[in-house]
Image 1 (cartoon, rainbow, N blue to C red):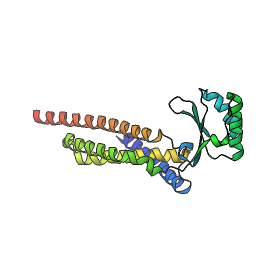
Image 2: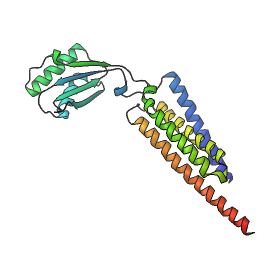
Image 3: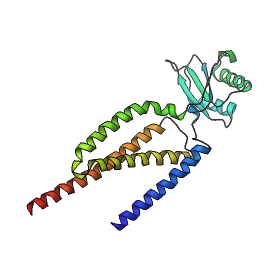
Image 4: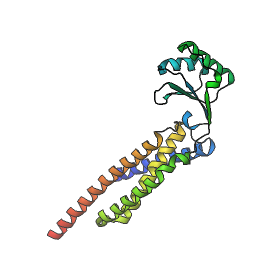
Length: 223
């Protein structure tokens, strides 16, 4: 029991340190957002024919150098390429169009580019769609815990569950902040998965406690 208690202290201590460093990073430099969620420029150019995205990448590597770039095929016939990057100069626009014309024997002009400036996406906006489903799930899980684990102090069990879930989310986002892992479309789904895994583990532990409690009650009744 003492070893388990010591391991818990180490676990909570390490978790607390990670959270503290995470809070410092969040308050000083914030999260590292992927290009998709940063201030960016999106260019779309209709080629009017099929193309290989690898060929477009070779062109953007030449035009944009080390700038981050996201390439996509768009439209129903996938004959339009979308290039998303941090910023685009007039020289880069012209160079991109010229190289596309040369590669695909076209006569496109810079005016044919559909350019959209996309603002930075705030973290709170990424979380919005998860708030309502999360609250509904939390309510149902709380009711289940209160009803299912009456014999092992359901209220205490619920508080313990909330503590572990908050700790999981806090450590997860602290690691992202400290390690400068970019916030991307999979960040929130992974957070949800982490919460679900903790829930499964927690329920498993509670079931073991309940089973032991029932066995203990039966043994006392026999006496």
